[in-house]
Amino acid sequence: MKIDVGCGFNKQPGYVGVDRYDTPDTKLICDFDSNIPIEDNSVEYIMASHSLEHANNLMKVMEELYRICKHKAIVCIVAPYHQTSLNMANPYHKQVFNEHTPRFFTKHALTNVSFADYYFPHAISWGLGESDNSNLQIDFRCVKMEFFYFPEYRSMSNDEKRRLRNTSNNIVDQIMYHLVVVKENISEEELDSISKGYLEEPVYVTIRKLREQCENLEFEKNSYQLEIDKLLSREMIQKQEKELQQQEQIQQHQEQIQQHQEQIQQHQEQIQQHQEQIQQQQEQIQQQQEQMQQQQERILQQQEQIQQQQEQIQQHQEQVVDNNIPHQDEMLQVGDLAKKIIIDLKDVLDELKINYKNKLVQREKEIMNLNDTYSSAIMEKSDSIHNLMRLHELQTESSTIYSEKIYGLWIENMLIKQGKLRRLINRTKRFFQRKEGDLSAIINEDCRDVVSQSILNTDVNLNNYILQLSSVIIPDHIIYYTVTPKLNGWSGIEVIFTNYSTNLSSKIMALEILSENNLILRTIFLDSFEIKHNKPTKIYFDQIEDSAMQKYFIRYVSTSPSIWGIQTYEWNKYNWRGTKQTVFCGSLVYN
Image 1 (cartoon, helix red, strand yellow):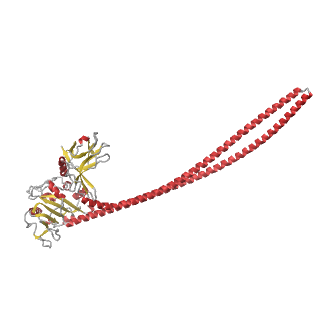
Image 2 (image 1 turned 135 degrees about the horizontal axis):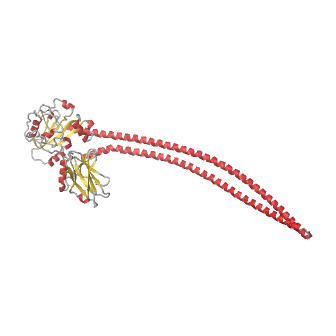
Image 3 (image 1 turned 180 degrees about the vertical axis):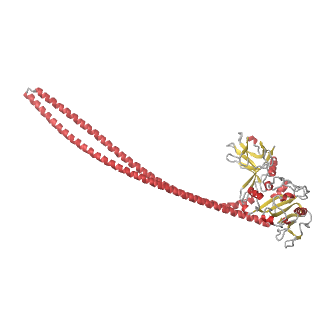
């Protein structure tokens, strides 16, 4: 039997309507403040949506609901969250509902609700049903508690929402509990199984959840669109800046080309002046050659004259010899004088020839040097102009290629961003279909106690989490987890590894304990043989005195570049975006 207590005009389909007013949906008219005319242990599911806040005596109503429920019946309560200004001002709301309300429906110390959601310094244990030394007659175990936030707070992290919820008003507008009625012995495994199973809720709550998911998807779409617009704007600015830089570089190169052209023109003028000087020198050489030629002609004439004189002297000598003239000494003197004149003339002629040849060779060398200088200058300036023009062409070509690359990247980026929303929707579908990969049912029997301790000691509600292996611990990839010790004197951890490593070197991995401010407090180096394969591994370190309720980070770091095959177990959950959330699997050791 299923009943809807305080159904009003919106009875849950498939339920029997119970209300003190006669409405079309009411099948059983009664005042639940006094009693409900239903037999003991006959109800399997109770829906109480926005009705129990009107009760005069909440504990009496809960005792009546407990009476009519079977063992392991489910009670779903939806109520306005107390810390809202409208609820506190409502004179018809007589009861307070927040994260601590269901703690007074049981005296059991454990719950499936996350410890962080109900943490209070002076009341760490869950059950507060006998906190006033009363004899509690009911036992409702809360297996699920959900908060419904105002729109402006939905996108915040769980820690931020929790902090605001505990310090400010108008953060949450309503709260929903799922309670299990316990009348016989029941194990924590059964309660955990119920919490992970399907739990009915009011139709309007389901509709609200779907609407919030749609709003979140719309927000994600707008965020991606804003990111695309920013990226496009940034790329356009970078492209314009690049084009301006290229234009400035081109302008600078054009100015350099113009300067080189002016320098070439100056060199051409200098070369022209050198050519004119060479021409003048050639004319001078030509004049000197003409003078030398004239001198040669004069020398030839003198030689002819000398030859004629020699012939005359010889004739004169012959005449003297023939006539036996007695003036032989005079004739000998004349002959010696003639020989001396001939020798002097030959020396002068040889000296003129040598000077002519030397000057001719010198002028030819000067002409060749001037020609080489002129040719080198022409070639050098031509190469400079060619290189500058080639540089200008390459820069223009580079600018074109860069623009094409930017355009191609922009098109590719647009295609990627447009596909993000489709991938987001596909991840959401996969999130509701992801059930495989849970190793908790097949893990080694020796390791089950560590897994159970991790469930009991964690602050995180492990509903919908599955036990999996972490990524392989390798260099440049650090694996870390967040833990919050419940006691002082924290001195070690007990965890489970898989070790397929063949590396037998010492100190292949390190365990680091970090504070909330990322300060390294402890470092423990582990040998390969200390890391047991699929067996509980205890790692001890110097105790941390004031560790209770402080946030720490556990970090695994590879110290060997060749380490492979070492993994640890961890709790994983994938949200509707497809993002993996990871929780530490292991127990904390205290002194």
